[in-house]
Length: 303
Ligand SMILES: NC(=O)c1ccc[n+]([C@@H]2O[C@H](COP(=O)([O-])OP(=O)(O)OC[C@H]3O[C@@H](n4cnc5c(N)ncnc54)[C@H](OP(=O)(O)O)[C@@H]3O)[C@@H](O)[C@H]2O)c1
Image 1 (cartoon, protein in one colour):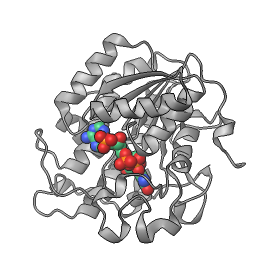
Image 2: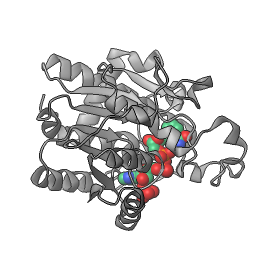
Image 3: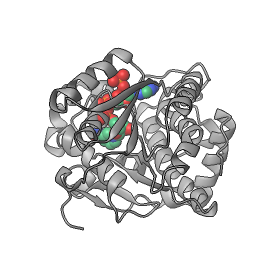
């Protein structure tokens, strides 16, 4: 694959992109690039002030940007259902949905729905939101769902015996579990789309080590804007947005592809197609997690 940059993105006028967590980090950078190419971008964010500030930043470089903010807190099923309802009534078809929002190594918290916070935000919220938005995606020719995972998925283990970490909570393990869940979800969604004869593609991607705000709960040696000791193995948030954008736009993408930076350990470099872990490709694990997620969230897919 040749080196891919934002300059490879053609005009996107007339296309609608829905990005979760577009108020900061790689989601904001991806939204800015798409808006500059003429796309309509829906910023699905939990904090209205931060979303408005993000929209303001995008408009500094693209004054005529077509942007819409929808309030979405992925850690709350009530909020997920409200946001989906709002979008279903005020939006036509959606061309690309980027399941990007995430938190890493958060202190233990149970959400109002009784879920562990990282699993709720990173996986269960996106599982439910995608299911509730799917018919708007199915209505758009050439549509895609991009789900953002992490190299941490390789250390992940889905603990069905203690999915919500009630017996034991380890921040890093809970993050890795949620990011493995993102990859398993992306591939199982593709299998189900294919089985239903749908043309929508489901693709996984991750930004590598991108200097965003994701490190707020890291040990202090890795915190701050510089990412401290981790700086040499990270790249900018703009560079981190590129694998997501390539997954969303590459005309050569196939359902179930996995886009990541091409460099050492997938941390930095231009975006390329790579291989995710063997575990993430396990169809039995994918199916089992899907069924558990559907039961926990009460969302069934229209496939
Ligand atoms: N940066 C990296 O090195 C790296 C590496 C691998 C994977 N990733 C993945 O990349 C994705 C984006 O992360 P980032 O690095 O851009 O981090 P970030 O700068 O912290 O941005 C995260 C975004 O997610 C939003 N968010 C958090 N909790 C949410 C919730 N409950 N509901 C809705 N939105 C929520 C945040 O909203 P607020 O603005 O309100 O906080 C923010 O917009 C994540 O899925 C992460 O796991 C990042």
